[in-house]
Image 1 (cartoon, rainbow, N blue to C red):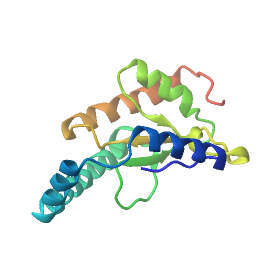
Image 2: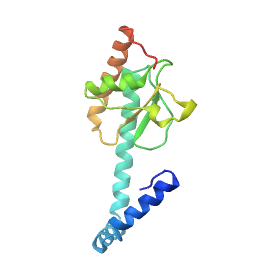
Image 3: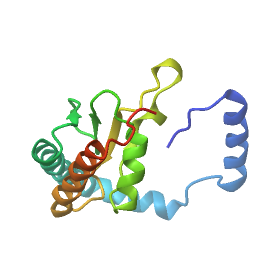
Image 4: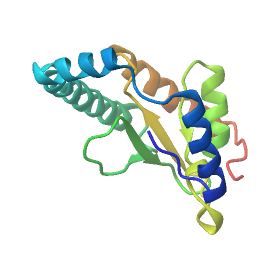
Length: 157
């Protein structure tokens, strides 16, 4: 893993890591080497790529069908899809409403800095969602968007 942080924090984290963990245990290193050496990692990554590709495609089709107001960004790979809503849509409010209904999405504003702050983007992850649960979740997203629009709830932040 990695951390992006001020230099002072990085120094502290490195010192803490040295105290907590000196070296990876030899048996863990041997197990990982065996897993990789026998081709299991390559096979696992291949299966994972296929599963993610299928989930991404299912998500894109479901968005087009049930939430046409959300426009997916072009992407290659990954485990989440970025979508943009119509101008004025507050995705933080949308995400809160969806959460109460059992659908979890990430409002995109936390990924922007300063003047680029925008509340009309969502990040929809699919790495841990079963394929058959994607369309019903997107249906809830579309219904919630429509209900918020018809209720004339304030969209702007």
